Amino acid sequence: MSKPSLSKSTPTTVRVAGAMVSLEGAVAVGVAVVLVARGLLGHDQNVTSGYGTAAWFAILGGAVLAAGLALIFGRRWGRAIAIVAQLLLLPVAWSLLTDSHQTLFGVLLAVVVFAALGCLFSSPTSRWLAAEYGEDPETGEPSDR
Image (cartoon, rainbow, N blue to C red):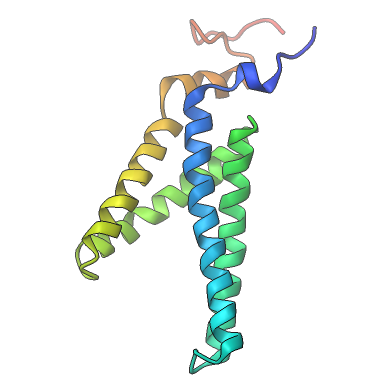
């Protein structure tokens, strides 16, 4: 029995979540590039701190970007990384809204995080994940493989 193609079997909710998570990862990688550029141009007082922060953003942003792309292409492993990233971004959004007084950025981030979480925990996404383990999407009962 042949497997259905990824483009037909992956729900829209997964692809939308993948797009949002990819955007978050791309922003983080972009921040890493800016931090390296600032370090090279001498704008940072402590060069080690600038490069270290850039490495941190590049590694984590790259992982989030990879998870988002994985979801876009229908790979299930990206969901776990995407959920963890969204849960870690919730306090960041809260901080932007309260302590940092960056209301616009806080609202934008919160909207993206809640939308991504909604897509990642939606019914079509759950059925798509359950299908990997042999469950019938309609009944939730184990199906014969």
